[in-house]
Amino acid sequence: MDRPTGRDVARLAGVSQATVSLVFSGSDTARARVSSATRDRVREAARQLGYQPQAAGRQLRLGRTGLVHLAVPNILGPFFARVLDGAQSAATELGLAVVFSSGWDGDALARACNSRQFDGLLLCSPDDSQLGELPASTPVVFLDADPALVAGSPLRRTLELDVSGGMASAVSHLRELGHRRIGHLRSTDSAYTFRSRQAGFEQAARSLEVLEVGVSINGGLEAARAAAHRLLADVPPQAVVCDDDVVAAGLYHAAADLGLRIPDDLSVVGIDNILAASLLAPALTTVDLPGEHLGSAGVGLLAELVAGRTPSAPAPLPTTLLVRGSTRAADSL
Image (tube, rainbow, N blue to C red):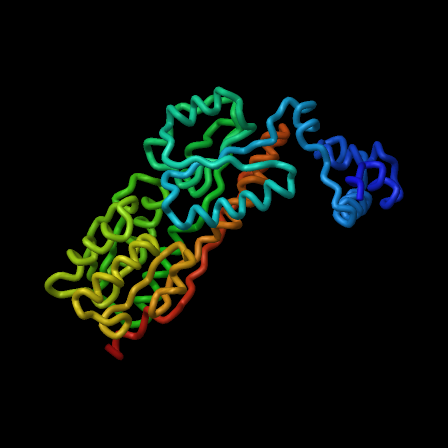
């Protein structure tokens, strides 16, 4: 079969070819001149026919590349795979593509912006090294980042996760189970997301006995395992909150090394809800951070900025405590 054309879509949808072109332009004019019902009918006809608009030509006419850049601090962090998955899905629906980078510092990101190789930047969970002077002309959406980064800039938005509330729910869960001596494997990373986790932990852990040990998130499983050994030395806490699920996995290893059973001897809570969390034995109680939603909503917000619109500041995305098998009541220990 020949490749379907805009004319084929127009015939099936019962509209003019000009209307088809207008719908797939993604412009404000299309929203104003074509009703929502007609736009839906055109898109459904395109789906049935397998029609793909010529994105490259459209982007060229608009002076754009059709690319958005997603930058993360460390590609080895499993959570970022969830963000990328959501970003790619949303970008595909919008006729865009996502390019990805890991560990670029502020200078590298600024050079990439100045090269105009992409239309906008998504900067996810940035650490201090990534927060250089980005060109004011580049639309940027900061994901899971400090809202203060966008102050006074019309081309900047922040999309937060309620990580502080998520951490507070983890501590409250342990408190409700009767645990009063709580360990915290705390990230030493400089990113805003970990400062927020720390704030949520401290707020919720008031009146509890707290033992804290710092751990480098970028150090991976072995760094987490070593930090957990330090935390569990001498008199272990009744329960431990970990700043992400990889750290929790390291704690599982350390507990096994020391002959401690989870949750019989030690309750454990993580945060992120990466795939491995449900594969641990027992499955990890953790706070779900909606990475896919963060990525998809971030692309949608960035597309609005690239199109010259002024979207309002979105509310933080909610987080959810998922209770699995790694926690139990203190009175049953």
